[in-house]
Amino acid sequence: MSKAEKSTIKRKPQTTNVYMIGSGIGTLTAAVYLIRDAKVPGKNIHFFETLDVDGGSLDGSGNSVKGYMIRGGRMLNIPTYECLQDVMRSIPSKEFSNITMEQEFLEFNEEFKTHSRARLVKKNGAKVDVTKMGFSSDDRADMEKLIFLENEKSLGTKQIKDVFGKHFFKTNFWLMWQTTFAFQPWSSAVELRRYMIRFMHEFPRIHTLAGVARTAYNQYESIVKPIVEWLQENGVKITFNATVKDISFIKNRKGENIVDKIIYSHNGKNKRMEISSSDLVFFINGCMTDNSNEASTDTVAKYNVADTAPSFSLWKKIADGRPELGNPETFCGNTDETMWMSFTVTINKNPKLFEYIQSFTRNHPGGGALVTFKDSAWRLSIVVARQPHFKNQPLDTQIFWGYSLNMFVNGDYVKKPMYKCTGREIMTELMGHLQIPKREQNEMMKGLICRTSIMPYIDAQFQPRRIGDRPLVNPKGYENFAFVSQFAELPDDVVFTMEYSVRAAQRAVYYLMGLDKELTPVSKHQYSPKVLLDSFFKLHS
Image (cartoon, rainbow, N blue to C red):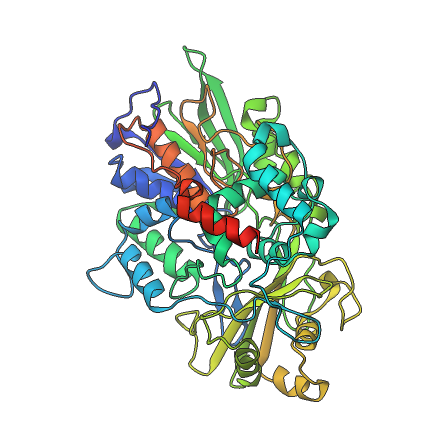
């Protein structure tokens, strides 16, 4: 373990004001670290949030009348989410008295285990034998080279398709790994390598996803809401409908950069906040759900790629002429490669489809994991959580979630691209892959609401990048400013996880507050003899 580096500015917790731009998991947990470890009073911490709800991309909302909505599906993993669990250890459970969020989380996952029996499904509805990965000798050689012989400098901006042959993308392994983590063939080879190392302990059981951990309810209610309530009980203030337009920097006497103003709009009125050199500013640069658009059963979601995404627009503005603040265009400049669609299905008082899926997969709700239809043109996957998934969910209502990685091609049963489809048409496509006879489909649609979401930047963090495109969490020469997002650089850890943002939050707080504390280390399962041996046998199965 290593001690955190320290800022050269000495700060007194009682007189330090902190301004958070965005209320995603990165800034929320930064606030926890500030209060718990740095002893900053909660009343000194202020959030600016563009939306009218907290949580950023970690969302979960709705009801049985309008339908529930979860834009993203998020995997948790107990052995590797060290920082998130560290934060959860300090927050009281909202479900049970006298235990923490972490205890609730661990007990839930001890009681409800994941073991998929239908990880990949063929076009005829038959389950694929996923105990075999399907590697050729060339695939094995390419994978071993990527993990053990390459490094991030040698890989540079190579895409996954640059380091593997065509056969690799037909293997069971690729179909499972791709859809578990949402990679594309054009995603960064560097990011894939990081994932293969970080989750090497999961490689031997990727076919059952037994390593997937869950929360009792959707992650907004199980993670975000308890943290927000704890912060508010400690005096933290969140201002909604407040969009930061610019961050002003000046040089201090030592030549270091200091934030001196935040320019923002609140409920349509332009305002500014004066920032002193002893204050701190944390910024979520780049939000993966910026400009997302939602629709429902009989409407079509639109995708907006105009240059108005709030977090990316602000990042572009402050990075202009400051290369040390990264290169946002690398991540938000090619939305055709970074967008995909998700859908959340609510079924009211008509359990036929839900029961059919349970019978089809041979998994009880919450006992399985992603079901991927391997021959689907859309690369369609669904997952059924333990019910109820929302606290206000009626007993006669069920929900499940799905997503597709290929939204620009015609479906197999609905002959149009997914992005042009209503929720009803997406359900028609899904029911086709589930082998549900047409005469039964209309009956199963009764009481069903399918809410859809297009997210132009959802895969942006996987874009091929150069060293420096992601700025450091604590940019050199900036004494009261930090990045806490998927688009800040953290050695060894993997983006598109909650853990990444929480780890950035810890690093930012410990540095800027000058704390004499050890940073939580990244677990190194790849050095375990057992993990290496199990992975070797799986690779050569």
